[in-house]
Length: 466
Image (cartoon, rainbow, N blue to C red):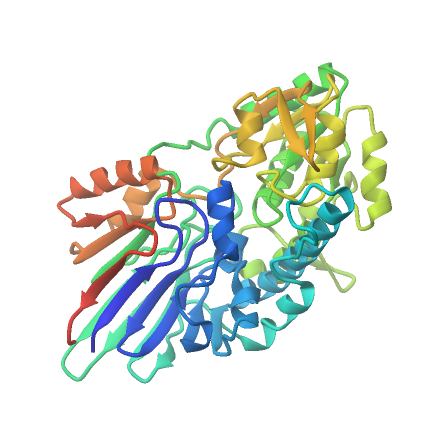
């Protein structure tokens, strides 16, 4: 059997994760994400996949972030009809994420048509809600650390990655009569001291290893989070303004709620109203309570209902368009958390459209902002940001808080790698911009390991005739 690996995404970028594993004529796709950020990356979403979707036997999903699952509706629409394997919590998140993504795709196409700012006469969504619904009957979920058959000679085991709810490291084991080979896909690895998630599982063996490198060139200490968040919130109150936080609905919103709840309990900040304006974040938060074995948050059952810190009285969930629009009228200290985290789409755009102009308000960027995203442009101090075809002046306060990322930093990536008893035959550095990937590669080379930073669409022979 010849085994080849082709990089259809997340090669020298942090989005579009897709790795095609070819075992003779059988094809397995690991992750199936959308490209985000720079326009030249986003345009890849509209290109035909370099492999016929109908020829793919199985898709393995490490976790439910859109840059790992967002292309699934298109894949199914274009002919894929095999199994999609993931963990139980990832299956629940996937339904929420893809339905929301399909809705956003439809809404943005309609809005572009209405406002006339698209280059196309009739803008079309990449996929629809209906396309997303076609994905779910193909999904087959499993628990962590249970080996399942993908092919007669190929087995899959998921291990906890600690990144978000349900996130997993995928270990693919290929067996023949004479030998066994392991290919390990790290997925996105989490933090070792995360207050919500358990640390990533230590693995000791891999013949081939793919490791993410989002923070491969830097440290991202968590020690300052509480002090920094306290300072930013209290400064915003002094300005008599509202704090707007673009935050990912999965993981980032929940950890922000955790820290804000903690600081209010300690009276480090006043007990402000917190508005969660993301239908997806609301549904995801419920899912955290349903999968309490996946994280550290205390969940209790009271009168037949699951209760946690997400149910405190000052947290308000905006379930309707009307309640979302009403937030624009708030002109006093309050906290609004809305998706998306890099301001690439969703309700956050409407809030930014109104609040970037207000000198008293604060926009708090909660962590990493990819190149080309609106969040990065705000972080870089650009005086105008384009929203809905209009150049919106940036007059409000812009702050960034670090340490909230669910990604392992350089120290933690190296700590996870140190668990391997022997060096893998090859280590592919993925899911990182070229600077972070290169820096991490140098660190790993110093361990005596063979490292490769693959190019987009580059292929490699992994095992010849096993």
